[in-house]
Image (cartoon, rainbow, N blue to C red; front, top):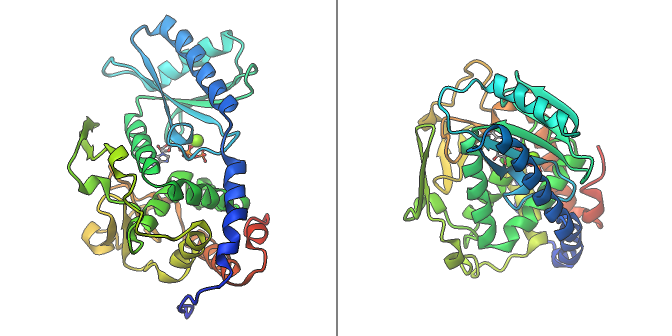
Length: 335
Ligand code: ATP
Ligand code: MG
């Protein structure tokens, strides 16, 4: 690969801010949609509590991390106190209860990596996945949500990147491309390493929020209302950031040696993590460390074919941002 080149400033890049912001605005869910989600959660809570009176329901994923686009499914976690529960049994029972209450398309997927019950609520039209005791996902949802409060540019960038990934077919984990969660972490990392930085490293600061989940201590500074000026010295706006983001993943990131780590706010080495060899199905072709489950590489789904697709898509996007007269259209053209 001989694609390294200096980004010369496309002089009209700031002309693209308004159209990119318009795309962002068009993706943000309406208040009406948000309230329908809450309404569904409340009615699910009532149903669940009839059977499990002390159980709690938590929203997680994009409906709660502030990176949810309009018309997304909602992700719900059922938290049960009892130890030694049989998740499959509970999921099957839950599916029966939901079915009896006229929810549609109820399906228990007990063999999935994260076992869930799927359903569709005919009243609100919202689809929903319910998992059990996946508390780590609730905590990483809060971390993402807290990062989003610090600088508006994160949410703008992540919405555009997610929209691009869906349009280009590179947001499909079972086909070896990356999850939405991985893309948001890539956005956070990118804004942490910008000079001047647009985002801090919350896990590197004094911990004001500490929980232990599945023997993993999750600790970080969550008083983010005090960090609203953090990125003020950096004046870059959305169009320039979208360009720099794709340029970073196309031409600057060291895929051979680097691991992106939101936890440390930096790049760490594959060698330090012992992620240099293929072990089982983990090939570590693009390495994205989970902020809490640090032995977990979110790039593990990527294989030798899909890494090529991904990198070609990053290059395509960077080149469009560099040269195309109408990047806000071309970038999102269906593949
Ligand atoms: P989308 O808008 O595409 O649904 P999402 O953020 O809800 O985006 P999902 O893939 O539905 O993404 O994942 C839901 C949540 O589950 C994530 O926000 C994250 O909290 C958690 N999660 C997903 N994948 C992983 C993973 N590989 N490791 C740890 N947590 C994950
Ligand atoms: Mg989701």
